[in-house]
Amino acid sequence: MNASLIRHPRQGDGIRLRMYLVVIAASLCALWIASYRQEAAKASSAGSADAKRTLSKDERMKWWRDARFGMFIHWGLYAVPAGEWKGKQVPGIGEWIMERAHIPVSEYEQLAKQFNPVKFDADQWVRIAKNAGMKYIVITSKHHDGFCLWDSKVTSYDIVDATPFKRDVLGELSRACKKEGIRLCFYHSIMDWHHPDAQAPFYPNYNDTKQSNPNFSRYVENYMKPQLKELVANYGPLGVLWFDGEWIGDWTEPQGKDLYNYVRGLQPNIIINNRVGKGRKGMEGLSKGDQEYAGDFGTPEQQIPAKGLPGVDWESCMTMNDTWGYKSSDQHWKSGEDLLRKLADIASKGGNFLLNVGPTSEGLIPGASVERLAAMGDWMEVNGESIYGTTASPLGEVPWGRCTAKPGKLYLHVFDWPANGKLEVPGLKDHVRKAYLLADKKRAKLPVTRSGDTLVVTVPEKAPDRINTVIVLEIKS
Ligand code: JFZ
Image (cartoon, helix red, strand yellow):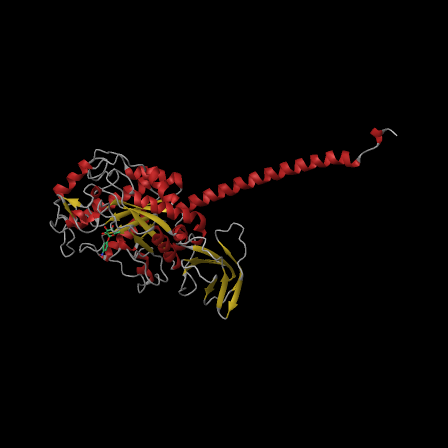
């Protein structure tokens, strides 16, 4: 029998089958590409729609609540004296030297001629923040001394017109942040020691909260508001406008409400802190309406509220040493261990950590800050899941560390490793499906037992991370 007549159904069908498979695969591939393109188009239009659509507060706050960790940057003319004036060390925080050394406006503004930060590199600053695990940057567009870090059209007291540097720092930072997916935010002082219509010059005391300037409203309408418009229009969309200097006698609650509305009109979905209004009174106790104008989040400074601020969004801002603006003499640095544990402590109470750097007059972030941020980034690389997008601990105080939460998961931040290999978790009633080390890619199960209301997790003898080892509990919440 002619072999050729012998159909090798399997062979002939095999070729046909392969052809069918190729056709099916090609069709599936085409379908996937079409649906991907449709999804991408929907997402981008949703994104732009979000940019146009006024979001609810929860929608507007989502990126900020997920971020949990940001970089504060205090930079300006005060980096030139760096804490010293006429040969003497000036006590206090570096950015207040004009006030603390009683420097007349005419003398202080001469510093602009010396401000030439030739080593400034926006991409480097943003990479340092991003590699630390930070998701947003808040930089002083204008601090109390009135000096502006952008090319403002309403003053020549700015980095482009008044310094030999002549570059628009905020413009360069805005481009670098967009490139790296970092949200750019501005700290902006309501108080202004340089503008003749604002508080200054009550030389020798620029911070005399009892004094009043009859022309303050003219400063607000003809100077501060136009500058805010420049910042939003030319460097936005911004993540946050972080106001400060609201404690002065010339600033009132009605002005705070007006400023809140003005900024919300410039960029409807911007986030505004609580220092836009009068003082930093806690937002609790305010009527719903007044809460709106009290800003979107509380700003405890150089401290972590013992129980957090239940019911409101809040952010602890903190220096790495003792000054916000650069002081060459201030070498009182917090350790990387302390900073990492503060991050976990703040997140366990439902807050954000805004950690400050004070760059030098050359435009460099101090080495001691860079080292600490790199160490924090190494930890965040492995454990970021236990910080980003988490909420406050549902457990009470735990003796060995802190706890953060996500739906169906608890993250146990163990600072003090149990010598007996038994980690006790009091007050956890939920059924625990699984426990494992977050750093363990295989997620090998850790044995769990119960003793009454206390869960006991058997852990390795040695702490994998001596500063903060994270254990994940998958729970039936
Ligand atoms: C303010 C600024 O004065 C300071 O320079 C820095 O920018 C910090 C982040 O914010 O610090 C203040 C302001 C007011 C009070 C305390 C710290 N206060 O009224 O107690």
